Amino acid sequence: QVQLVESGGGLVQAGGSLKLSCLVSGRTLNVLGMGWFRQAPGKEREFVACVNWNGASTSYADSVKGRFTISRDDAKNTMYLQMNSLKPGDTAVYYCGQRPLYAADCFRALGDYDSWGQGTQVTVSS
Image (cartoon, rainbow, N blue to C red):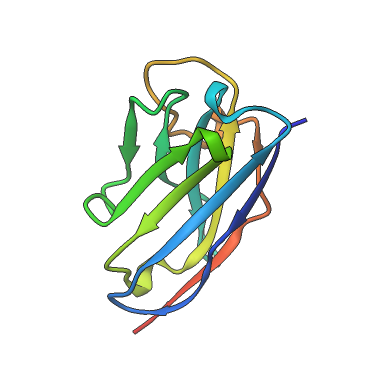
């Protein structure tokens, strides 16, 4: 069974940076499509970024494009989300998801993912 554990969240001022990590166990990362989603209070979980199984394809939500970077280190079985120029609107719980599928593109839809981590809180103060 694949398990995902997010870390790296915290409180940061607007304009600051954070780097989230998603440690994968139970399966090697190089067979998984991976993604980051976030959920703010009172809102639905929304897509942030994704990367396909071999890292060749990435995709970002328009709201984070140019500020966030998704990456993966298969040797460490870990996926990352580097978040720069953070805004108060980025405040949310951030979740990583996985889907064991070889595909040319990564997955942007919530329903595409098989399982999720427990989430890590990111709070951006103004």
